Image 1 (cartoon, helix red, strand yellow):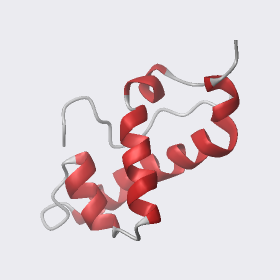
Image 2 (image 1 turned 90 degrees about the vertical axis):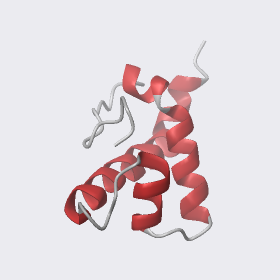
Image 3 (image 1 turned 90 degrees about the horizontal axis):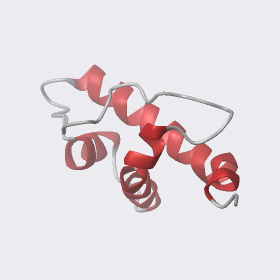
Length: 84
């Protein structure tokens, strides 16, 4: 896994976390890859740096966690991004 990327994204419903701020570009890459119909395996390997052949369960778990948070950032978290 790439340095600084966690298998399970720290979650908060109350706002943007420091992990969110540090990995915002990862979330954008994931959302872009989802829009391009990339597979979970492709995203895990290319974006998170997890080999899905060697660690299939870990790859799925990590990418799912990041997809969920990326979607939250778009649907709910964006109000925190643009708050003054």
